[in-house]
Image (tube, rainbow, N blue to C red; front, side, top):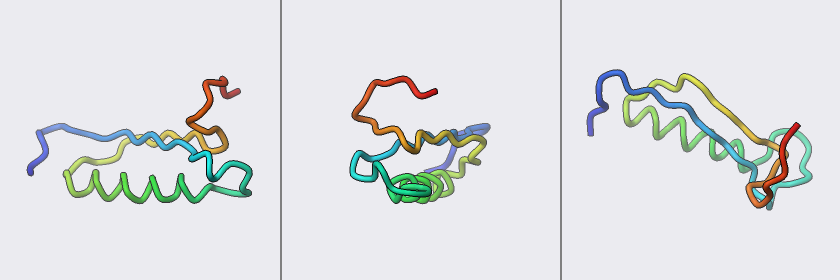
Length: 65
């Protein structure tokens, strides 16, 4: 598969509830980062931004401040 001209990627990483309470970067964030960077590379998409909600589980709608 070839990437369309001008395609770029922004990655969004979200904490797994299984990783809540760990010190440092969570294992789920590190795994997601690796998988998404590899996928973008295979598609030929440069990664231009990365957003991570480390410390906030996807099982809550609480606002991060």
